[in-house]
Length: 231
Image (cartoon, rainbow, N blue to C red; front, side):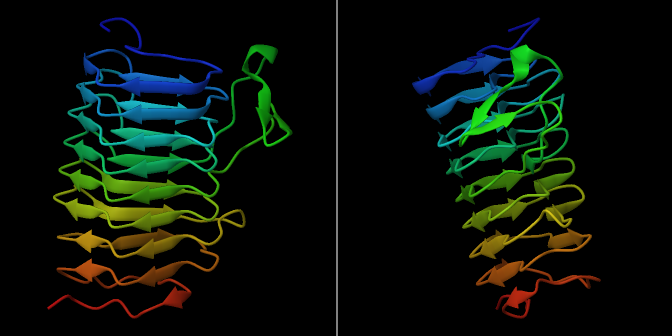
C-alpha cells in the first residue's frame, strides 16, 4: 500500500471485505463508484498517508462495522461521500489528522468512466449527491484533530449512540443548506465537545444525548429536547 490504495473495489456488489490489516497506502480501503450490498467489517487500518482509512463514494445499501481506523496523516478515519442507505456502526476512529467520520455531498469527476446509476438515477459530474437515509451509530470518535463527525448537506441521517472525546475543534459538526433535511442526533455520549450547527438546518432533532459540558451556541435544532448538562 505504499504508492496506492491498499484495497480498491469498483462497481461491485455482494462483497465482503473482512479481517484485513493495512498500514500506509493512499487510502486503506477505498470503494469508489456504485458499489452496493458490500460489508466492510473487522479490518484494522493504520496511517493512511494521503487520504482516508475507509472511504466509500456513491455506494448504497452497504455496511461498515467493527473496524479500527487510526492515525491517518491524510484526512479522515472514515468517509461516506454521496452514499445511500449505508450503515456505519461500532467502529473506532482515533487520532486521524482531520475528522473521525466525514459524511458529505459528492459529485464524480467528469467522464463516462465515472458515470453510473443510484436508485435508477444517472449520476454524472453535474449531479451532486447528498448522503441519504444513512445510520452512523455506536462509533467511538477519539482524538481526531478536527471533528469527531462532520456532516455536510445530508438528508435523513441518524447519528445514534456514538461516543465523542478529545476531538480537536468540536465533537459533531453539521453544515446545512436547502438540501439538508431531517438530521437526527439521538442518544450520543459527548464526554467533551458539543454539537456545532453551521447554516440552516431543516428539522434537526436532538433527543437523549449526554453532555459533560454544554457550550453556548448561536443555532439549535428545530425539534427535540433542550440541551442540558448530564448529571
